[in-house]
Length: 251
Image (cartoon, rainbow, N blue to C red; front, side, top):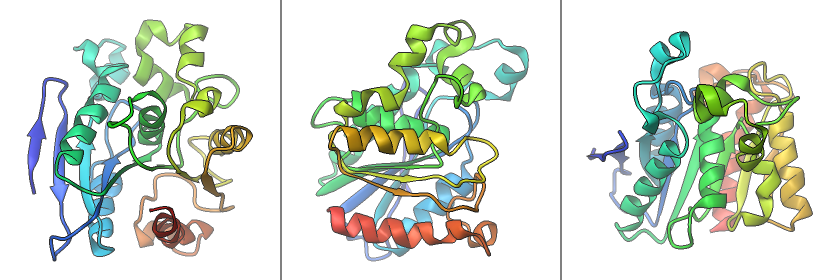
């Protein structure tokens, strides 16, 4: 493992396949409403699964404000709101791309899904990911399908009330800026982030002629990552193999 940190409170942990050879690397962004990070289930476990399938993985701990900020509505640092998270992803992608991989993509869960979509839309050529996989992602910042906790976590206590800010960070409104293939997953029974988030993103990508693949199982809920125990007996259990098949066909 390798730890890299920078002024934006970024920590990047490297996970390599046993043989050490990989042409493709994935920056993994755990979810947590932009307030905390699911480091195990949507970070380390995902990286290990990618390694088992021959891919290098780099788990990004991007800036989040923490439980204290969620309860008190007070932030200790401006870097824990937009654009601090995007700057952390940019730094991670630059670090990983400097290692000489043929392809460097990004996979994000929940709020992390919004972050990787932001990278696909807002980062410059040469830095932006070569593919993104938003898994049960937060996409829109607008009613009626917004995940309000993520919106506050991303924008801060004041900017969360600004409609212009909502529009600028609603990913479905800027699908024309996406320059890479997109793999989307969301379950119809998701109790946390409404499935319409992923569907709107897919519809917008289709309208702009952008390459994407949407998997929308009926059952699975939210927060299952790649853990078989959390997916047992649910339709979402198809997604890991579906992603690997898609990725091999997209490279």
